[in-house]
Length: 372
Image (cartoon, rainbow, N blue to C red; front, top):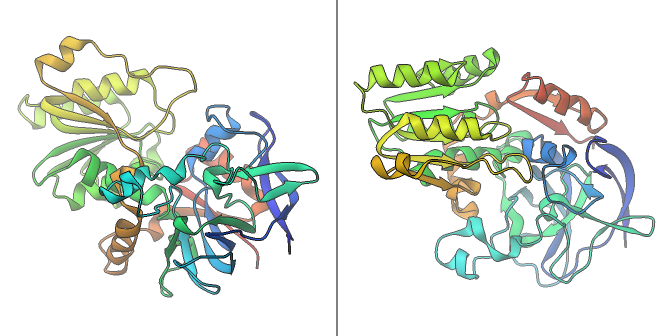
């Protein structure tokens, strides 16, 4: 039978998040109903309310979440009722072409991320006669949601839900951008633009991979200070200052890697990143920009002369079923700082306040704690 769930939805851009009571269907085949305990306030959800994400409105927000499986539909094998889980914002079925070739971050079952529609063409959230999808077919800004079993990853009993929520997106996206997508190696010089929830984990990944210099560029002093907690060796408010430092410290060879993780990607950031890497250097793009704005516009000579590369990274090239448990293991051993990522906790009713704090540079990551 269906149940009523409190949820935050966006009806259209520039109106913020609105709390409503939705009807939630039972799970169908290969689906599970989850009671969320925590949800991360990722910048990608802010892109929805800013009109920079191509989504179907109205939409239930939230794509970082952890909770407990309440019930399961037919044919579910991965989890059972009562299991603690993290939701991966990209599902991993394990059988499609990307999954079977080691690229679970591009699983074909994630094709409806922008609509929240299930693979049978239907929706599970309803507001009166209106069907709603959850962002990334999750909707973690709801007390309950129906999600694909392929999006479920076990969460060990000793890991708090608030920490678990973050490893469904921000942590592996940032960490993997450095470790997997960029391929940072021992002794490298890495410049990271933007030290929020994703960039802070790019810092941790680069440092753990053995980078000698982990240089962070962020205009917010609080984020620069926190970047040092996560392993940054040098921080700058201005890209030009960072560039001058890199020239000096590398004796003109420039950086091996630049990783772009600002809240909103701009042409200026990309240009700075391309200029800061040296011969054979790589620029990794993780953040997204304004809808309809082309942010990658680089003179070909700058690419050819130094044989530079520019590439995108989705989920940090991580394989959710393998990398999420590995990251939790690093957290458990004290090698990965996750508690420090959580700056503030909010009730669902305070969601707009949380995103206001994020916009003002007050948070590395805010977390919604759902009431029991």
